Image (cartoon, rainbow, N blue to C red; front, side):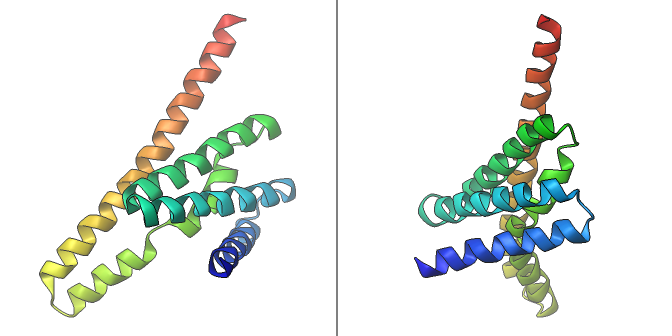
Length: 146
C-alpha cells in the first residue's frame, strides 16, 4: 500500500515539474498533476490484474478525457493538460529493454519486448485519438443543436 502511495506521489511531482518545464499556465499545473496520478493508479491496477495493454489504454483514456473536460472549462487547448500528465505512463522501460536486448545481440528478446512496447504505445495513441474524436463529436452536436 505504501508503495502505491509513493508511486502516486512521485507521479504527481514528476508531472508537476514537467508541466513547469513546459511553461504550462500556473492554473493548469495542479489539474494535470492530479489527472496524472489518477491515470497512473488506473494503469497500475489494470496492468496488475487484467493486462498491461488495457492498463495503458485505460489510464491514457482517463487522462485524455479529463484533459478534454478541463480544456472546455479553462478555455485552453487540451494538450496543455494531457501532455504533461501522460508522461509518467509512457512505456520508457520497455523501450530501454528493447534497445538493451538489441545491443546484447539478443534479437528474439528484442522483438518480443519491442512488440509488446509498440502495442502499448499504440493503445495509448488509440485512447487519445478516441477521446479526442468523441470530444469533437460532442462539441459539434452542442453547437449544431443551438
